[in-house]
Length: 307
Image (cartoon, rainbow, N blue to C red; front, side, top):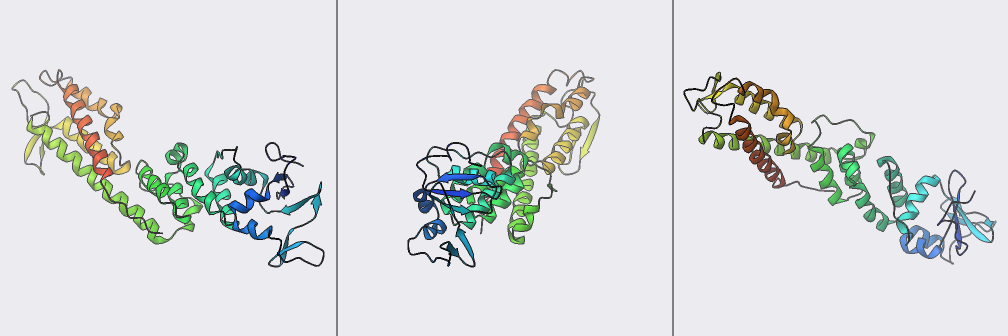
C-alpha cells in the first residue's frame, strides 16, 4: 500500500517500506542530508550481498525494487515514519497527539543518526499540552536526548503537580542523578515559595490587615502566632496555613490566584462588623502580592542541568 501525499511523489527516487507494509516514496538527497545512516546507505561504494542487496551489518537494508525504485524495508510503523519524515520534508510540519508517538520518532531519529531531527523535535516536546499533562515525562525524554531547553521547561512545569508525580516507564531511562536534580529543584522552589509567602503575609500584618484586632468592634476569634509572637485573626491564620499546604503540593503562584480557596475563610469574616467591609479587599491585595512574589522567587531558582 502506498502512503498518502506528500509521500507518493512521482519524482521520488527511493521507497521506504514501513513495518506495516506502507510504502513511502521519498528522496535520497533529503535522507542523505538529514542522516549519516542513509548517506552511507546510498553511497555508490557500499558493500553488496551476493544477490545485489545492500548490506548493513548482517542484514540487507535495501531489498528489491518497485516501479524501478529501490525499496528500503524499515522496522518502524507507518505512523512513526510519517512523523520522522515530516521533520525533513520541506513542506511538512511534524505534529504529535501523544508523547509516546513523539518518543518513537525520537528513537528512530537516534537509530538513523538524524541529529537535526532530534534538535527540531525539542519544540514538539515542549507543546503546552504535554507540559501541562506530563511535565515529568517531558523532562525525562529531554534528559535522554540532551535537550536542555525542554528539560528546563519540563522541570518548571512539574512544579504544578504533586510531589509524588505519576509513574512513567520513561523514568527507567534516566540516571538517578537526573531524577535527584529534579527533586532537589522542587525542594528549593517549595522552600522559596513558602518563605516568600510568609514574608508578604508578615508585611501585610505591618499594615494591620491580618494581625490582632485593629478595632474595638472586631469580634473575630484570635489565634496566637508562635513564630511571630502576635495575636492573629484565626480565620486569617487558617487561610495562610491552607495556602502553605497547597504550595507544597503545587509550587506555583496560581495557588494564590485561586479565588475559590479563600471563600470559606472570607465567609467567616462576614460575621465581624469590623472585618466584613475590608476583608475581601485585604485578602485580594495579599494574594496578588504573594502570587507575584512566589513566581519571581521560583524564576530565580537555579536549576543545574548535566547530561
